Image (cartoon, rainbow, N blue to C red; front, top):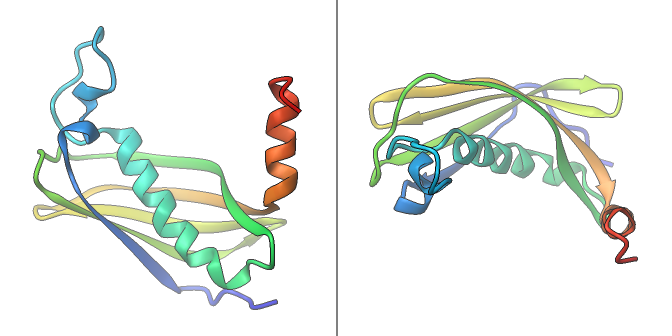
Length: 134
């Protein structure tokens, strides 16, 4: 199996649409019309998952286990957000990434994200058992 090199960095980019805004997440609560924290975290996860590709075997995928981020600046619709994930090491079975996100104005968020390698079939079977659909 391939090992990841500390410092290896992968990225993901996304143009912010109306559906990515915090205001689109709820019709009841009053959230602002700026890039949602949940969407920023998702983009960070995509960047980190791309970094995991070299270590995945047949039938395996990586899943997010924990995210500890700060969302420090608002991004309006139409802006391009770029997330970067830098591999920093392994803690037990977890792969640890330093993640950042930026738009045209600079950094909008940063944090630590941990991922694990799982067998896709086992993951889906476990999810089905939880809901009684196995």
